[in-house]
Length: 466
Image (tube, rainbow, N blue to C red):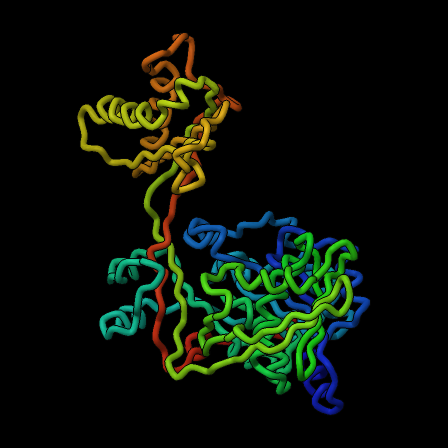
């Protein structure tokens, strides 16, 4: 019997609380060993790790590359895989390889197979793919089964065909199917983070509201604590609630910090939408067990009769190059909103003498308007600023030409009150122009209406013989 079958049989036979270890909020950036070992000593029934996020932007999805360093990724995967096999408990990983498309999943699987060979491991593994069929999406779009949200424009046929990769975020049902297949390891493509941790307790008949609420918190590891951190976290779930405890003794899961975590990545702190339904936190209760642990109860789960799958896709938009510089002249800083558009016009006239403008150029002045969309009018100007000019053009050479020209002319651009012609800019390094390679944008960020939210995600079972 494999790990998932053992745990399911054991807990069904002798009903008891379930203990889950949230090992990492994004696998591949390092798991603190002391806290991880503390978590293992608590004998968890499952080790779970979220491995991806949309926070990293569209480029990794578009290029099919991991956001994490290869050696760090291998180190983390080896750590959790060896731990799960030593305890004979399921290891569940979602959004494999950062973005969860086929290249990311396959790269993750290659590392896992290599670790198994090197360490002589044997286990049964479920692999769940998240890539969506283009013909199916074209048909769904024409049938009106794809809807926009978050101010995205309506999806077009070109969006579907031009995206480098398109994935759907699988829900809890797919993970339940995998764990029911009597496996030791589950590796999934792009997934809702809740599915990683909620599937096992829901299979065992624990309350769906409690299981989903717990999962939404512990997928971020100890981020819900004071001070927040990335150390592993332990959740112990029973029929009436769950208790949270960081594995780092310096981090405290308090009622306030845990409740505040409901705002993380959520516009509404009382409502969490998932493919299969909605989590209602309006009656959730947070009670201190002691100064480091909080007990949570009261969440309610509502199934939906209109399931949807969130889709993500990224399209190539050109080659990106940037100019990186700083300025400390208060006159330059005060006039930067007038100077930079004028410079952009000047550069356009120089590089587009014999052709139409084929690039976009954008400026960010950090310290003035680089981060915030709206800056208070009464705010005093900073003493120095960081300037970033970003060009996206059809080719690497064209993007480089634009930012190099920007550098030279901004360096000596004249403006009222300038005291010296020697240079307006300071450079953190040379060259200050950097080519960043292909640039992508999210062109698919839509909801797909489905009858069965699990049917889109095929599962394969593989026996690893190390």
